[in-house]
Length: 115
Image 1 (cartoon, rainbow, N blue to C red):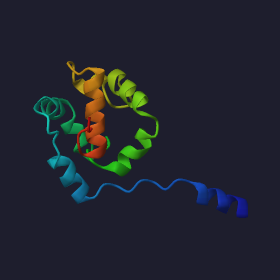
Image 2 (spheres, rainbow, N blue to C red; image 1 turned 30 degrees about the horizontal axis):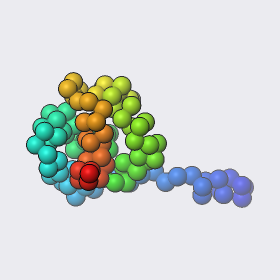
Image 3 (cartoon, rainbow, N blue to C red; image 1 turned 90 degrees about the horizontal axis):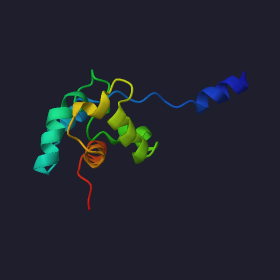
């Protein structure tokens, strides 16, 4: 019995559902770069600002953390090829791998990458 209790204690907690303020923040964030903003609004915004889409919300660091733990190369590969419910390139036909990386950085941190 103690073993079962110990194993249950090691189990990862289910992530908390996003709050109304998390959703409001996701809806308000936009990349500073006009080109990146246009790609984000055209291809990413609909899913990454909706709880129903089950995609990680833009700027919700807790939701992005496990994905980032897999490494940026894996995230870019998944974004380019499609993964689970995400279609290839997130429907951004003109996005390069560099664009996809910049979009992931923006969405996972709520700000653009500093160069």
